Length: 256
Length: 281
Image (cartoon, rainbow over all chains, first blue to last red; front, side, top):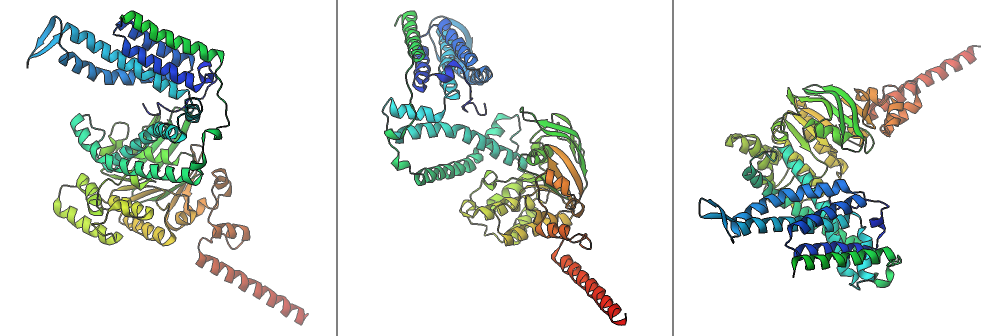
């Protein structure tokens, strides 16, 4: 999932929304996922995520995210299946392991929740410039710039570190480290020492960023320094109502 | 030894390499030159199997890179990256050099001997922490751990970046020694002085294709190809090209000095003959 948080430029309706609206929509989709235990609603939310991706012109990224999350979900599904017990026993396995009716239902809920709640944040970050997000947090939500900067920098560094790690893996594979092995235990054994160069590079990069921010007058920046306006338009209000409707629907359907 | 046949490669954003065909024999010292983005690093990554060609074939020592793992190719290919920090992963210089040696050999005696030789050749303190070394020294350590293994093919991606003149010459000297022992060296380099001093053959890359391939001196005469690849020959060669007749074979300071002396002698003789002619006339 290389570069899955990188900004994808575009001119879609979603691109033009206020960053705050996009953040609210993403968070409300997450909230709806966690409120509901209804499988159909959770599947509908995943489909909504894909529709959002399609509308923003990043369907391929949406599908890539879905594929990646599905792989992780398989492991989580198996674990939940074995460790959640309740209701009728469907299958009895050796070592006193049971697959129960509630285990299956909850495993599905957890996996669908994971996919449904992770996708909107990644999609939102794909169609929002980090600077806009940071500015809106400072001007609209009155968060001190220092903290908004920390948050956006942390997110900006994720793809940088992913890129760095793939470079380190390339360098080590070129030395003969069998990182291309199919044996998962061997692979873990070889990947662990690579944390050293990644850590060193990360610390150096962070130190470099801090110094360059400081020499460019980071401490002089205040809320008033932001010259770009982020007005709330009718479309933003509409999307916020839709977000509220989504949460409300989840509450009604789940009967919370 | 290295054989590329009609190689195409793309990262999904248009073709980075187009129809590359070339053969590099054992013991050659080849430099790949070209502007940034010409496809030099991509070409080198294709050679050690980190990238697989979209079409065409890359064969190294009878091993097709499409069917051979990079870690298996690494037994005969050493690859030095631009950024040494991606390679260094141990806490001492000794452990770092040992890491590469232990991946390549089982014989403890041989490993110890190679370690000792490498430490003394590069002048490293075995117990020092690699991350406390300067950028240039870390690059030399990355190179040292490759050279310790004595690979048959050594691929270097800008080996002298960040070096001062003395460091660059010392490092290139060590690489040349390995080449003299029979290793094939393929080097990406932006420093044309280094290319002229060490490479025997140059591949000029522009927009993903090889636009010139030949002996180093021959290539530095091809002004048009070099211009197309945004490469300038060393200043001495540029001066020789401007001076024209009598300076065609000038590629070093000594050659320039001899050519100037020859030209002065010729002119002196000509003036002398003219003066004698005037007197007798």
